[in-house]
Image 1 (tube, rainbow, N blue to C red):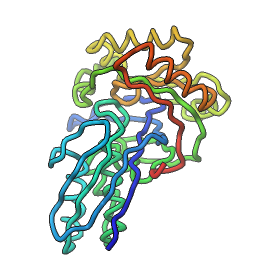
Image 2: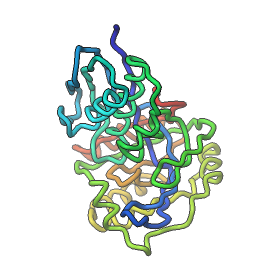
Image 3: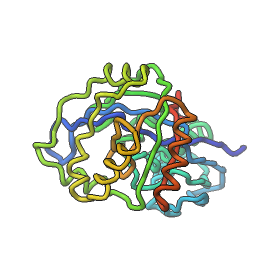
Image 4: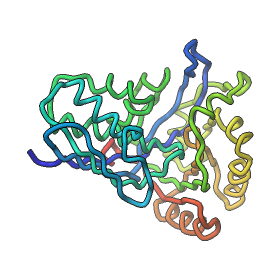
Length: 283
């Protein structure tokens, strides 16, 4: 049985509306999700039993059960009850605590790969939701409107768009960002059609992220960074997910690369990256 290679691609939230708080503490969301061509690599190597994990690449990540990729492998193998195990070899590129869904993308890639390595009649979407709200979308990727806690997905026609990402040298814990939300932060629904139309026409999208006030209050340098990026001529600067990555749309990949290079030199120690949206989970 040969090894399986999967790409685990980062996502952007092209707007995020918090519609309310559920009884269990979760929040009711509406968000527009898009995968990008910025990806980790996940190699699944069959072995006799159990789960192993090796992590390499420029970004550090845990190599034990605290890693979502490990938990995804364990969950799948338990669900299908196969005689066999897997070693997950993960090459990390996507920074953690960035609002880019890197850990969720890795978990989704593990589920996809194991479904090829050990095929079985199992509901991958149900397993994905048990791992995290972003994982069901990242199983397929592309472009989708998500509601509920992220599990109610409406997939849309892929969008070609280009963005520059800037992440300061600190992380924002997702749970803390949501815990700091107040009811006054809850905003109106996103106008999905208007956002997509603006991106296709090269205009500034009418998007918003209802987590920004709480996160910017807890992390004032992030609010300052948004103003600095706007001062560099970027329009429509938005936080992805719960941060700490900020991003802005630009008219071409070449312009995104130019901005990423300029901003990397202007802000040493910050992570900058040019990305484009992709058609699916494999980039």
